Amino acid sequence: MSARIDLPPVRHLGPPRLTTGLDRFQRLDLAAHTRLHPPLPRLTQGTLLDLAERVDLRGRGGAGFPFARKARAAVAAADRTGTRPVVVVNGAEGEPPSAKDRMLLARAPHLVLDGACLAAAAFGAEEIVIGVAAGSPGEVSIPAAIAERDLPCPARTVCLPERFVSGESGALIRGVNGLPVLPAAVKARAAEGGTGGVRRRPTLLSNAETWAQLAVAARLGPEAYAAVGTDSEPGTVLLTVNRPGAEPLVVEAPFGTRLGDVLDTGGLRPGDGVLVGGYHGGWLDPVDAVSASLSRAGLAELGGTLGAGAIVALPAATCPLGEIARVAAWLAGQSAGQCGPCKRGLPDAAESLAALATGAGGPAELEDVQRALGGAQGGGACSHPDGTARFVLSALDVFAGDVEAHVAGTGCGRPVLGVLPLPRDEGPHLEVDWSRCAGHGLCGVLAPGLVRLGPHGYPASTTVPVAPWQEHGAHRAVNQCPALALRMRRPERK
Image (cartoon, rainbow, N blue to C red):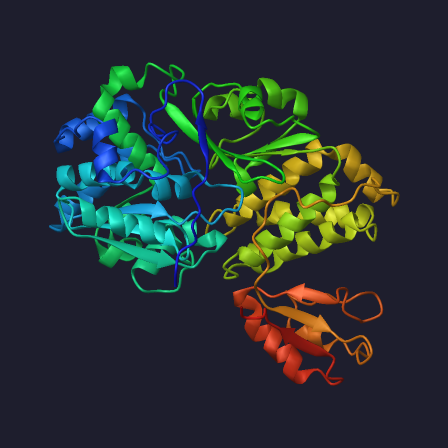
């Protein structure tokens, strides 16, 4: 399978660090990389841990977990079990509005490998594993970079399905271990090894930007690294600014930068509201958004989260509720479908949102959304239900006026322009032939999380996207429909 040629453009506010040289080079091979970046210092285990603590290096994949704490846990587990740890780079960026890790893997792969190699050498790692989305630029760029350089231990690239849950740490490690790429049903810490680690080894896993930041911090030292950013959050952060009708822009900015300045860099206005943190992030009121400080602490004051750093401004020309309903339906289909909140809670909320957006719902549907997402929070095997609930519930708050208009039945009168980015729909669909359907309702029994029946026993939708975990139920419904009114339609192969 050949990889797509996809090299997101970049800009920077303040001096560039991770984006150094990308204004002149499409991709930094080893020769260009070594001309632009000073030699990488050799760090002992102690000096690397001290550096990560002094700059308060935290994961840039969304959770913001302290890197040094994970690293200490992995080292302690390796000492306790008499094994060597595994270093894992999480480059499986499955979130449509985020392109920062994809940019790094495609355009600055050696900076990511620098950070991974620093840790591998300091901790005596057995192996470096780089997880990338199948068909993404990293599938070609990372192996090429590995072939160019000396490494402290063996390294390999693992290609994973391009799905939202593939980037969840447990799902990625399962994929590396040759298992289905799904979050583990029972949570286990990768750093502890055992069922949570690669080949049961203690595993130090961080996303691509985190490893690149470690390489920058090692070259600069803690004082120079903290010359930009805030006192509590030093350094820079990569942000993906989504621009309607144009490719996303990756912006490197110091922590504490005003969100309004980042929007200006992308030529955007705050519109009716601004999403920060991607599809597991939250919405900000446009007035608050302009002056919001892009830091974990600054966004928390507004009830927001930095998450994966993906930013979308919703223009006033599109229907907010319709946009949210599109993404909620996609998120419901992207789950692993292995626990109650994802099997029932997210699909129920998506169905009720769709009814509200199309004018077929009312106060009862709004209550259904709030109840389904409220019940989904805190009860899943991974963070997918919680993140989806944050995305939808914050939208209901920020776009309260639009929601009220839809609940009242009048609607906002605006079309759904599809501003919130989603991948091209390539999955199977369950289709209903109305000329045959007799309202037996058996499909709703055989595939309850997929087919919802209307008040007269007929399916509520004519075309329903089918998630991988729903295919068994969909086939049962097709095969056992008394009227032969259902069929599975799969995308045409090109």
